Length: 131
Image (tube, rainbow, N blue to C red; front, side):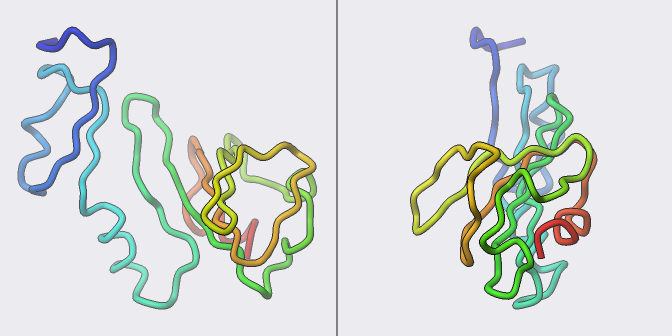
């Protein structure tokens, strides 16, 4: 590629330009600045506690966020007790603005933000597991 770094990522501000930033130009990961907004708009305001944040094309995975609602069946349950879709891991939990890398015994609380990395699960799969 054109760059000397081992990995390069770019944030695309103009949706019409993603083709300018690809592996031929030395870019491994493309992230559209509008992707999270687009996902939110597609779901409709106020309807989604789970949002697809971005796709890491080179790695072949998606990053999905879900917020644990007060009525979620996962409140006060350990992560190991929650059946995740195949190829899905909890990368971080953000509680009161503080991110942590949880272990299997981590207990979820209402309003926790859970960041998941998944090979093939979609938003609906994550909602089924956590909401």
